Amino acid sequence: MRLDQQTRDIIKSEVTRCLGQEAVVRLFGSRVDDTQRGGDIDLLIDVTAVIPNRIAAECRLAASLFIKLGGRKVDVLIREPGNPPLPIHEQALRQGIIL
Amino acid sequence: MKIGAETWLVLTRLARITERENHHLQRTAERLEAQAPDLAWVSSLEGNDERGEMLDAFVSRFGRLQDTLDDKLLPALLRATLEKTGTQLDNLLRAEKLGWIESVQAWMELRELRNRLIHEYMESSDDILDALLAALRGVEVLSKAQARMAAYLQSLEAMH
Image (cartoon, rainbow over all chains, first blue to last red; front, side):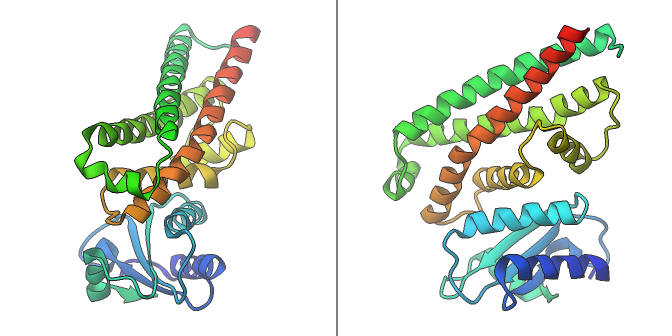
């Protein structure tokens, strides 16, 4: 995983603030590949309850992480319980690392 | 403050472009709002070229205005006023301080929304509808930023 401890801590505390303590954050995409360089930070977040407007929550979190991480690009996907997994979720679950 | 002729040319050209882009965005946003998009409307996009094209026009005009404002006009305005320009985040934070944009947070949320509407990773009509309605509400944020930057440029011209 190519993400330093400070970045991981910021991500986790921001996710907790926005989505609660129960939310599980997975890093996936190019940042889990140690042979690559740079790249966006892709996150899949599992929440325990359905969110009224998931898209808005994803955009809000991506925007606040962009600011908190000094302008680094973060892609956020939120997975709610009971929804059928999308192909991108399956990929994230397969290769993702829980933060 | 001395602003060179070359810089004025660039600034006034960008001001004209963003004004036009804003006008075009308003037009499609109004057309789209008049359709009162709901789930049935979004579900019909696949088979309805006119609606699909209306959505595409809205999304691309939305993105174009936001891009020209924050990639071009904002750094040019900051440079003209001898402000340091930096990363996209630095410039946006400066714009927030100067009152040109409401907040960096709201600005970046709109950028995210736009990305979601462009890339088709939204497989459900619910998601597309949520993103579309939020983007329609966000049009005002872009228009205000355009108006404020244009007003600032006019105040520079008056001083010049």
